[in-house]
Amino acid sequence: MAARLSLLLAVLAVAAGRAAAQDYDFFYLVLQWPGSYCDTKQSCCYPKSGKPAADFGIHGLWPNRDDGTYPQNCSPDNAFNPSKVSDLLSSLRAKWPTLACPSNDGLRFWGHEWEKHGTCAANVFDEHGYFQAAMRLRDQLGVLAALSSAGVNPDGGYYSLSQIKGAISQGTGFEPYVECNRDEAGNSQLYQLYFCVDAAGDSFVECPVLPRGRPCGNRIEFPAF
Image (cartoon, rainbow, N blue to C red; front, top):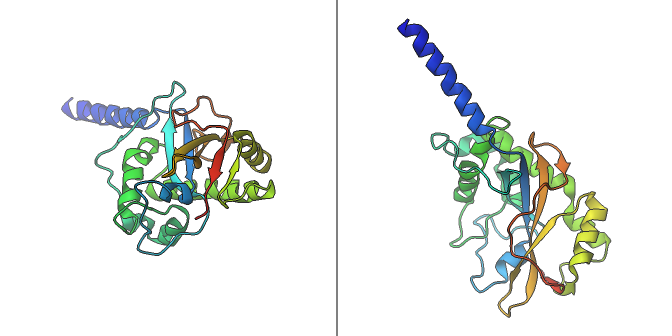
């Protein structure tokens, strides 16, 4: 009887863990323009591997719910282990760079993203799969090429919100939520793009709810990097 009870409790624990891990409806893939991260009062620090390419990098792949809330830190015991993504490190440095100060190797940033967000999608991804999927999705979009094709370039010029959204929508097939930040002079600048991904983590979808990012004005700077 005791053995059966122990087995039942173990099964229930596993089921509860799976249920918790599936407590979301879709993902936000959040891409960040490095020029806007750096062109602020707090500035930035290039990673130890050197200045990243002038392209949109990944901020995160975040499980989200249709009501706008989101799960976080779902498995404290499932800490980030760099050895599990050793074959991805060069790609992570290129596509998911950190610009936080002081200059660092990115491991703390990636660890934060996995532990806060990635562990909440353990029903779909292990650690390696999580980072691999985010980079694949980012590459699939080709945001910078879409903008450039429409004449929207990171040259310090100013563009309207409709120009930016239209260029990305035409080039990628999906309209992102655009978040802006402010440069040292207080100008609104293109900062982050939010795209929505289905709960399986493999296909883009129209966003069921928009994030609570900082809105943009109609005159948006696209700074060089």
